Amino acid sequence: MLFVPGGLMGTLACMNDPDVQAFLKSRAPHSRFITSVCTDSLVLAAAGLLQGYKATSHWSVVNLLPLMGAIESHERVVQDRNRITGEGVTAGLDFGLLLAAQLRGQAAAEHIQLIIQYAPQPPFHHGDPSEISESQMAIERSHRTWMDGKTLQAAQTAARHLNL
Image (cartoon, rainbow, N blue to C red; front, side, top):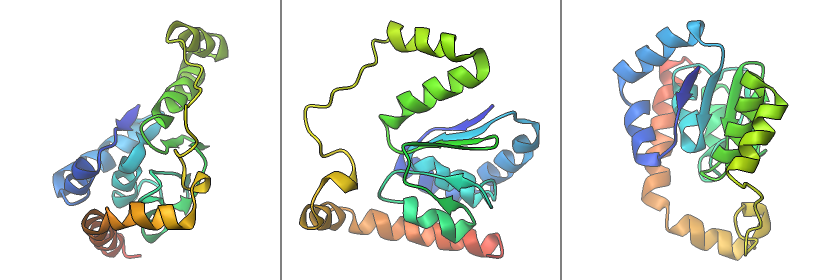
């Protein structure tokens, strides 16, 4: 399995690092699953590993996936053939359970879910852009101007390298 975890500063570094990109491209043909959680679906996309695949990412960057040939999805976890991507940090738990079911069966995944007592009941409903107002979303975006600009630049550079 090839797994790339999230974290936007690391994502930017990996998107712009030719050695990381070469490593991912070299490992992908030997991987049963090619996966990522949170922003690092951008790293897979920058390596050309999501071209023609449906994928998701953190809400702040999911719109950049099509620049690099991926099919944008706003689902919490997306599996398209042997590519599995998850939205943000907490989607990593859902992602992990899905992957456990793929590798060891549903009963094993259900056992894990019970062992970690994963039964989410968030105290607020503010965890997805669809749950907040446009004005609240504008405020959230305003705090991300620099980071979103850097991420867009990295995605555009990757798209040029992929001849897209």
